[in-house]
Length: 214
Image (cartoon, rainbow, N blue to C red; front, side, top):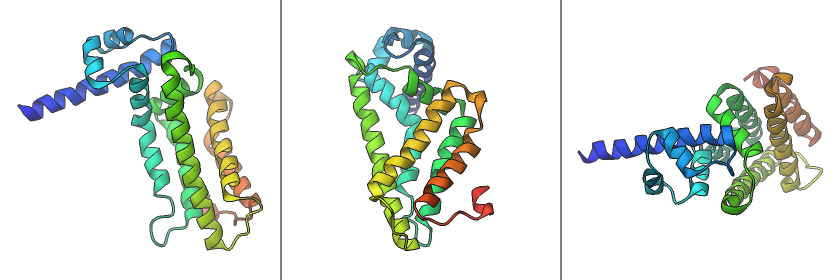
């Protein structure tokens, strides 16, 4: 019975997150109420407050459901013995673009986060979570770039932290521009070329053709 109750609670939580994705996508975050989400999920506001403190908490949980696996992948870059942190970082960046294209849930959540949230009022805590995620990503990129520079004996033309800012801006900018009109360009192949060009500009070796095709 306890197991069934836990499973039911988890199912309700996922149902609320699913509903939030669609409601936020349709109305925008500031114009969506918790009641709108409860109705879309076929439950009550009380069920929302059982799982989430407020709308910002619900939004952040919705984001984490798709971004946590990406953040965990970033944390593992270059940590496995024998693996090249440069290739890990290159592959992780392209994988983010590929996942956004192929996974409608990821695409919808990124679109909400990019264009349908205003950092005002009860959405201000969302900005803090966004900044924490960005800063964590930059820290991991900085670590990997420095580790890759040490491995490849590459003298970076700028501090690793500054190079990480540039790489992050490329990936983030590609995502935001692609989301405006997904049919305009192939974000995966464009991103792959842009990332490779940037890394080569830092002095790293260009990837072998088979590595780029991964």
